[in-house]
Image (cartoon, rainbow, N blue to C red; front, top):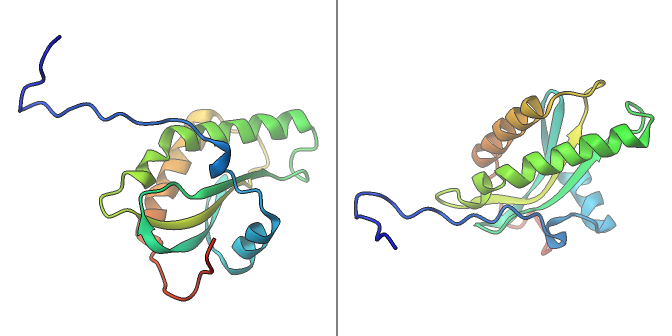
Length: 147
């Protein structure tokens, strides 16, 4: 067994899971997210987020959505939701491993495009969206109720 030298950093053990606890399912929280949340678009995605009370390293609760109006067939909607979940799962560490933490409590990732895009494009847009979230999301005391 090799001992790592002081010059080489230890490899970071990341969890790439997306457990049920991180899925946003409660109707009350979803209504609060869309009622009071902030949003921005990065075609073909739209990110809606609600800041947490304090900066944290815990992952936010996430909702993934694809419009039935744009994609009539459930097969297509499910495929795109799978792409979004996979892209988020592989890149959520950008939020959870931020130096000073992040202030995102709830997050919705909505696919707004009219046609299916390749995974590489979706992932690239999601990464730039997560980076933008790190700069935009700042906790505002008294604005968010306890989750």
